[in-house]
Image (cartoon, rainbow over all chains, first blue to last red; front, side, top):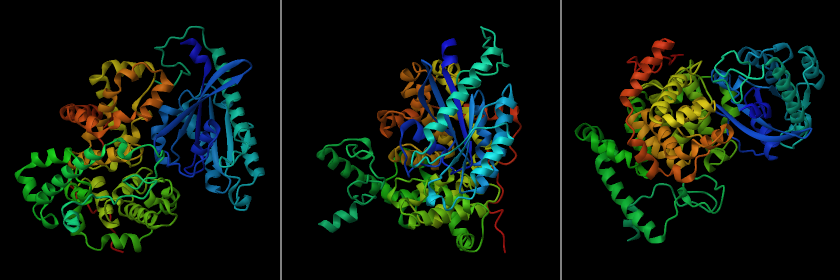
Length: 206
Length: 367
């Protein structure tokens, strides 16, 4: 499956419960917003075809449950990710404070080969709420945190209004592609599928 | 004449206004018929008469206020089992669920406790619960209205449980259990049924589905994966080739007992059997779904496979074909062996997955 390995990009979305992970994914993939999403139990995923320089890629986006207790189920989804999206709600300080935990949890569970340079993207969602009046996390503060973690790209979005979602995911896809290709450089042409040290796999870690 | 008809035959859910299905969910597609089964007028009439007969049989079996139930159950457990597998009449469902789950006894033994939990106690999970209230059965008319009676009851039951059992507290997924129950019984009844399930009044306690680390989910997923490989070897092999494991599709089957995303009429039928026979039915239904769709599933690559496992076709989810298939799968002994194997590998779970005989009310505080 060498061709598939090159054309599949795996993205995982993490963040506290209720920050809008499912909504962001659906806005990006289906261009739709609904007030009727159920709380995500376990994990869900959608795919989208993206094109870069005449090449087609499948972006496989994993949406996870935000409640801390579900992290024990997350391992199967974290492994093999090419990019990790950290989402918080600009109207909730707690969801911002937790970004650090989500980032560390991801690095521990996913165990990427080059954790220092693993691509993250941070999204501050729900900028539409109350016309921005109930916002408690400033853009400056968020950008400062992103800068301190190795210049993580930062986007402010409204999944409801569809603001900046496309832009955020373009960066996500680009960074995932870069990370996927860089890692391939370390790999020999033929890969021993039985080798459990294989740093990344097609869909998941078996 | 009209009166007699009403006395003899109670159809359960009231005939619904346009736009709602017979369970109160907002119809996604106006062309979809209720329960996914199209019936002609005479067939409908036939169904109605049959249903009336069933209700009368059930009434006799239960007796006034449940007075004959225990006696009947002792004398003819197999008749009870067979009738439950055919589906409990909707108008009696809520009451029968309380009888078979053991929650009725808990309620009677603990007067005033629920009120105490709701009114006087505070819970660390209150904000978490509130955040999920509008995300639980959002397309059901009872739970739709912001701060309406449905949302309030759901909040009260979940908050009461999170105080009652502080180790479990509130975990996403419990809302779907509570929500389903609240469509068939009062808040207090729903609370005690939740207690009966999680603490194990009749069957093994389910609290391990929600405790830190979700130990019982992990065990069930291990058992399920093995059963798939043993009973459906071709599909099992295809799953491993495509790197599919059950945590990607089956965790919500166990965590919400099929109430999260399955058609409601199917979920109810599964719950009838689940409350009487225990969690085995979740495994059986899961296997039956895979069996029914086997020939399609083995052909699909990863992405399509995951999608298919979360969106089974309508004909696969018809209770009258799916459930008989599920009943025909025998797994009791194998499930037990796999549980032992799992415990040997991972250490025995200290408190869940075991049918402990400790008192069911350990955490009520007297303050």
